[in-house]
Each structure stands twice: as C-alpha cells, then as structure tokens.
Image 1: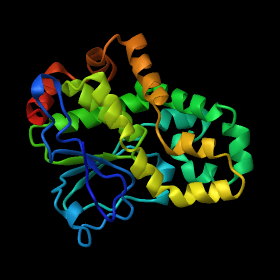
Image 2 (image 1 turned 45 degrees about the vertical axis):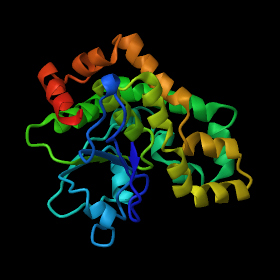
Image 3 (image 1 turned 120 degrees about the horizontal axis):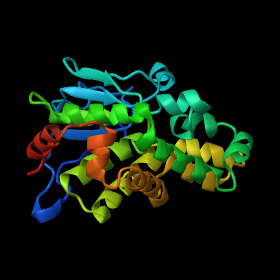
Amino acid sequence: MIAIPATTVANLRDLGSTPLSGGRTVRPGLVFRAGQLDRMDPAADPAVAGLGLRTVLDLRTDAERADHPDRVPDGTRLLIADALADKLSEAGAPAAAQLKHILADPVVAEEHLGGGKAQALFADTYRSLVSSGSARAAYRTLLTELAAADAGPLLFHCTAGKDRTGWGATVILALLGADGATVEREYLSVNPAVRQAFAPLIEGFVAQGGDPEIALAIIGVVPAYLEAALDEVDSTYGSMEKYVREGLGVPDDAVARLRERLIA
C-alpha cells in the first residue's frame, strides 16, 4: 500500500502495489482510502489532483457528515454508505464516530473508556462492521462499485480512515488474495499517519490529565480490533468468500470482475 503525501487529505493511501498470492499485486491508481475530506482541495494539492477520482464513498454517520462535509473534485460522484447507522440507532454514536468529543473531557473518557472498556467497545464495533445490516450494505456498495464495468478510480473513507475504512481495505485485500500477515500489516500501517493527524487532540487530552492509554486505544488501531472482525466472519460465515457472497450479497460474477480489474 502506498502512502500519498497529500497536503489537504489526511491518511491518504493507494491500495495499489500490495502483494498478493502467486507473486501478483494490487493494480495501483484504482482504489484509495483516506480520512475525512472536508479540507480536500485539488487546486492546491497536486497529489489529490493527480488521482483522477471518479467516485468517493463516504462511510460516516449523518452527524459526522454534517460537521465536516466532504469536498470532492468537480465531476466526482459522492456516495453515502453509513456503515454505523444500525449501531448508532441501537446505542448512540460509537467511539469510532466521536473521537474528538470523547477526548475533550478526560473525566468522561475515564468513566466510559478506562480499564479496558475502550478496547472492548472497539472490538464490539468491529464485530458490528461484519454483522449489522447497515455495515453489510455499505461494504456491498464498496465492492459492487469497484466491480462496475465503468468504474474509475474510487476513494473510500470515514473520519480518521482507520476503522470503517480499515475494514473495507481488509475485505478488498483478502478477496484479492492477500495473506493474513499482509492484511494485518496493511491494517496497522495507518497508525503513524492517524496519530500525527490527531496529535494536538492527544496532547491536549493528556495535558488535562487524560490517560494516554485511552487516547491510543481510540486513536490508533491494534491487532485485537481486526481479530474481532475476522472472528465474526469465521464464526458467522466460515470464510471471507462466504461473507462477501452471503453476508454482503455480492454475486460471484462481480467478485470475478473486481479481481480481473484490480489484480496486476
């Protein structure tokens, strides 16, 4: 996966060049991931202008989009696929969707996320990214858009570009033939960019007496979060292939087109 040094988009990466089985790789320039796009400015950012984006898929909640609406290049389709809609309706906004709010008050953070609660909440959110109806619809849209006959370069994103986006990247890479070690390495590779983007928030939280372990648990990603989602796939469907076919409802011919298009 290639990190793209954009100045107006945080955590922008090309899934291209990720190694796959049989010595193959993901074809570059076709599928990108990132954090929120509220500052995207192709006119001032050559790295963004050069992507040639045709479609942007926003995985965020209504509240996140209202607070920080996407800016996308002229002529780019913007699709909404709220992966956490069902989770939000059940129990309010999950931690993955309210990072800044949580880290604004160390007392509240300790009450709700201290003592391992943050890790447990994120693991639960990751399981819902596999099993909830809204998440299955969101990732079905992601895969079918990538498999479309007229598909062009597509970027998918959430707020930090690490959890909802990270699961989307995991599904794509596993489906294309990346092994488990590669999938985990690519999942964890966003940590430096995410922590850099949220450094002022983390520093302010700790300066107010907040527990740095809480900050790191919700700002970064760890193997246990990914393992929770993969365990949910295994226990419910038995394999990633069956999850995509039966859980997401993506037909085999669409998977075949996606592989033909994205595998170099």
